[in-house]
Image (cartoon, rainbow, N blue to C red; front, side, top):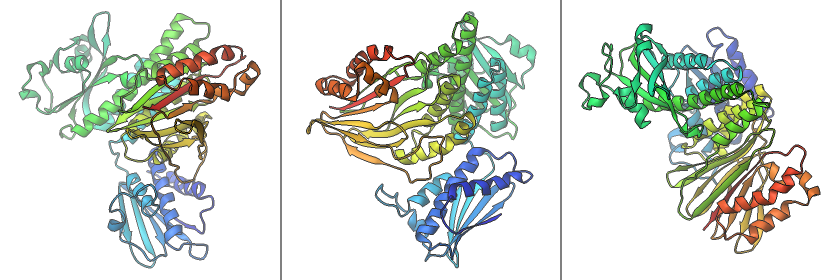
Amino acid sequence: MKLALPSLKNLGPRIDRWLKGIRKVAGFTNLPQSLLQDLKLAIVEGVGNAFQHGKCNTKHPAKLELIASSKQIQVEICDWGKGYTLERALRGHPSESETHGRGLWIIKNLVDEVKYRRGSPNRLILKKNLIRTKNIDAAMELFHELQDSVQALKPLEKLYDQFVDFIMGLFNAERASFLIYDPESRVLRVATSRGIPAKISQRIAIKSGEGIAGYVFQTSRPLLVNNLNHSQVKVLQPRNKGYASSSFVSVPVIASPLLIGEETLGVLNLTDRRDGTAFTSQDLKLLNLMATQAASLFRIRSLIDQVKRSEAINRELEIVSEIQDRMLPHEFPHLSGIQIGAQCQMSPRGGGDYFDVIKVDSQLRGVIADVSGHNVGSALTMASFRSIVRSLSFDPNTPGQLLRVLRWAMHEELIRLGQFISCWVWQLDAKGRLTLSGAGHPPVLVYRENRKCWESLLSHHLPLGLEDESRPQNLKITLKAGDWVLFYTDGLFDPRMRETGLDRDNVLTLVEKNRRLHPKKMTDKIFELLKPHHQLLRSPDDVAVFAIKKR
């Protein structure tokens, strides 16, 4: 497949149509969407470089050629510039102020191999492996499949089967068992299994702390054992003999990373790979991530069943409120010199407001977002968004680059559901250096203690779910002692409340007068001010406020 691009006009849609052509070829109809999204973003960056540095224009268009095999997709991008040395261009990570070389770094992180051949023309060669790699793409694929099943209200038992079948195929295992904890009998029982006779699986009842599965359940820690017959820890000896290999992996299916229920639901065990190889530490990490993501959806599906059983008058709204309340963090990581407080008030209709903070090394990384809609679909989209954000939180990229990856990762799902997400993504260190990037979200408000004034930071990108080909935005400010930062969702300054006597100035004046308070107490005061005005609205929106103070 070949393509000539005389300009950058409509670049994204043209690349989309070009890549979709490969799905019409036999053997390539089931390519993961995430793979094509990564390839598209890499091609867009490569073509941008070709026009910026490679002297491509209408007379000398950038030329693309796609070569696909059973194991790999290769794309060549031709330009007409002087050329460069790839190793030298990738030596050292470019700073935020540099544009030269940044595109290559993005490309390097999106594809499996990058080569550059000087000549007439020069050729930038991108290679993407089709052999499934055990990375975040697989975790996202499982999450989306389970999410669709939850929205279709499939029974929990079907979700368990779907979960185990996906895991077995990914890890090429012959035996698997998913055990759920029964609080009444206080034992782990098999919910579904593969490669284990039904008569045996039905009799399995494991107490907390007993054997490998009981140990993993009790400690909530994943475990990799590559020598079952010579384990040095007696408690870790397997209950049942007859394994074909000595490699065993067991992970807790725990919902606490998403704060839904704060409990370990059960344990997933895998053993006996079909090719006889042992499980690795990377397998353990991926399996643990996928089990955590699946647990959040198992809990959501369970909550739906609970609400149905209670025969509530407004079932869907109870589900939405329950999901949203349990997903929001109630405690925040500590960072020297920084104080944090946040609060969310649910709308009677439910909603999709969400915030989160994670500590990565010596920095805090956070997000505030608002998912459109007021139903179970919005709550599930919020869960999907949060799962992806947390999965990417340890990536070294800037907030602007992270937001760009989030846009591609969520785009197909948001288009399919007719939704969009506005958000701010940010990172902050102990010295008060704040970097942030926004997508269609209300402005960030910054109070400067030394000047006794407010500043507004505007997001330059469209909400997620809409096409936006602009370069990543990375706003940078430095907070001094006494400075405040307010992130919020649009319900805080609902224009309808002006008729009840509340506007933006009232809120900002409240913050100024109480700026000596801790942010947690500050958000309490903001919601005390807001409550009587909010109650007078016919259909009030949900509201989230996230406050940061530099001590």
